[in-house]
Length: 268
Figure 1 (cartoon, helix red, strand yellow):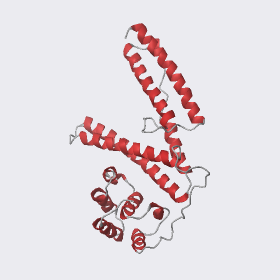
Figure 2 (cartoon, helix red, strand yellow; figure 1 turned 45 degrees about the horizontal axis):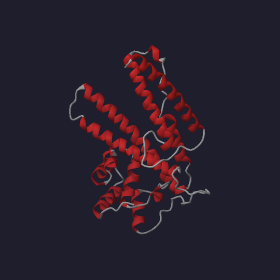
Figure 3 (cartoon, rainbow, N blue to C red; figure 1 turned 90 degrees about the vertical axis):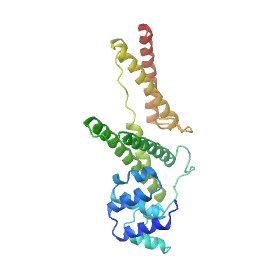
């Protein structure tokens, strides 16, 4: 748990006593939360998410907040008094016969995916900042596209955070697994494969580049369970998804070979 100074805790106490107004919660997150990405994205969070994050910043453990509908000020008062909140679900360990936090464990995979999402969100924050203060139509469209993508990634990350913390509280990882299955199942479309001889020179080189990118991403999915390389291997577990990815990889390599032959024939 992060350590929070007394001044910040007093600000959060006053906010809770005032009924948890959303505008104040956003201001506190921006001014006081140590995580830059979390603070910058506070205005995009729901009221329940802001309440959760500020109570966690206060020092209250996540498992005390899950399924806890008590007023925030009561949760804080009971925490300060050293009492357990009464509506929290009991914490249980995963009822599995294996080591709970191996490299292929859903919680470990979810943490890696959430970290990657945070990196992408940070990059989008910087992209949005780089658009400056210009207000012409082209810049506005660009800024909107960046912000829409940022909201989408923040939503994905919040879903993963919530599912992961729920798993810690209940011992059930099915919610985490469902989100990971959804993200990996929808993330990588199969590119079109037109006949190489029917393509123009520009289309041919573009198709070769796109196919190479698709191959690299599938190799990463197989070796790291994500589209980009990671510090340590985390192979995709055996099953239907792995079989499908391996078949796509085989087909893409064969198609890239055809594209390469056509490029050589034309002397490009």
